[in-house]
Image 1 (cartoon, rainbow, N blue to C red):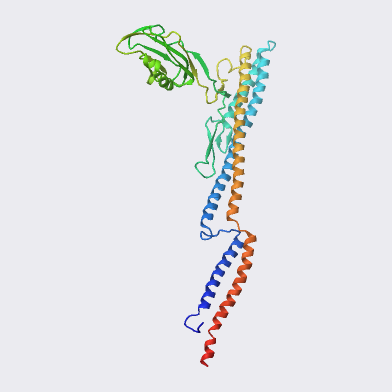
Image 2 (cartoon, rainbow, N blue to C red):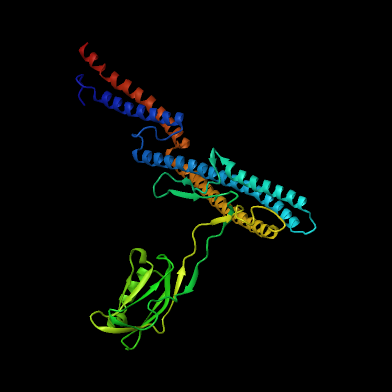
Length: 403
């Protein structure tokens, strides 16, 4: 190796390595002092994106848990108010039972009615004055409780309705159950003659379903039949009947009415020829679907129960008993919603904890590794400085040659 002073390659290499060591040492000290492994995008770009995304999820879930808790508070307020309504109604049961007894005089019945009126008035007051965070509780308007993990696919909105409460509607009644009746109104009901003769079956509403057996004979020919399963809508019935080979072969066409006649199934015979339609053997049912929302409760403003007297005591007693059942149904619905929101809050809290743990594993400093790196880079820093010093001193040997 020749001696020269133009470039000190050894010193340059030592300086480059020392700079790298100092950068690594600085990064390690930053990790140790901040507790975070990722302090800039340069440290771990993919890890930073993942950790920040998880942190956003945790923030949304934490607030979602609070949202659900607030919804529970609203529902518990309604439940507490309804428990007082039940107490008032129980007192009304006593008054109505007492007023029905023929041993009371008119003055005593009047006193019972006065307390009965106070009970009704207080129930109305509870309904109109019960508030949560400045919002009326018994508004019969759905309150939305939003729960999300920060993504559109992870968002759920719970619609919580406490129902109305007034003297005109105490409690809520259960949704109407599904009901079926035989269709006895096909028009015409007897065999008909004419080109393109029709038979019409009217349902109670266009949203009702039709089921049973439809049997039609055209011009005295053999009857063709089709069976419609329970829950068949009119639109589906039309499709099924027109796809039936027997019906199409007999020249029959099914259709649904329009506008005000949208609740009707229409069977049309062959056009262009005179024919007779016979509906013998047809047995169809009209089914009204079950209701999806609760109905109003007992109306104490109605005649016969608005005032308590010897004559109305029995009717009042029946209405009060029904109102107690309706309030119990309303409280049961509210209780189910409370359980649902509590479950949503618990899920959000649990998911928040798990995602926080996942974020921590990505972002947090591994102190075991970091302290080991610190010791390594300290040694490398000292040896690097020593090496640079030695590299710089080598060129001093050239001076000895010039002496």
